[in-house]
Image 1 (cartoon, helix red, strand yellow):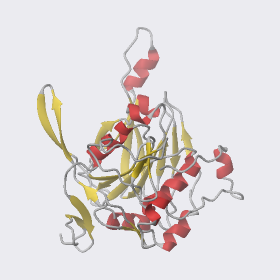
Image 2 (image 1 turned 135 degrees about the vertical axis):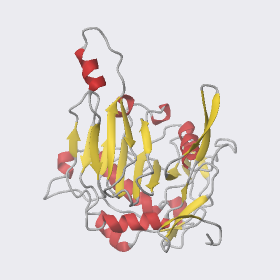
Image 3 (image 1 turned 90 degrees about the horizontal axis):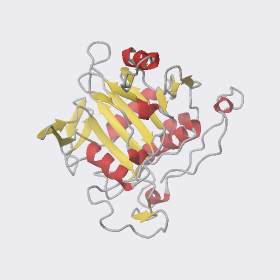
Length: 334
């Protein structure tokens, strides 16, 4: 369900002040058009319809990126493109407020085994996900078909989850991101960090289902949070000073502000870990949304993303009156 690849062009051409390319915003995908009243996206897998982006935000999106991306390749195996910001300050707060107020989220719980002992993990943030791997796509009626044949997928192809299309309010951002990162994406993961106590530990997005050298575009909205990166440990070798340099280096810290975007590409995921640590002070009492776009190649990616970002828990939605996420029930009661 990702958009067709755009023609490769130098990034400097995109950032030319006199001829900066503008992303064209197109109508909603066909699998959402028939299920919409032209003001919201709906699908059988959504607990409730998701409104379209307001017109003033749609118009402003054509002004992105706000600044030229900074290439960061000064450390071994690191390849980043850092926009400070990508979304202009003139409407990044409007976009944050809209997405926090309209999207549905989950507080996923799951169990893992460590040393033969089963442990329950409570995800320390709110999550949601949309998308489908490259082997399948959404048909015009919203059903899932095989990409290669356009025939309906086998009923048991995705036995552990119910994939759902990316709604218009996130898909417009995806399409613009594809233009300025020269990559295509079929998944959108959204994390909501309610305050400084919500976090994500060091990890890398190096799963096989993402393919070789995956590109992952990560947006931040709301509270500023530190984004830490460190190289994966390298086995020491006699006389090898590079391994000592890598293993003793301090983590790279990027203070992600609202509207910023960082593209991780090349060998980064295979060799680097990243995290959003807990924090106190500063903007720790404010919420933050993180949106990542990525591309899953096979069905294992679809099952993985829905298992760890939806699970089987209840739906949560922002309560503007109480200024917090609250459990949502069909009919709008909380």
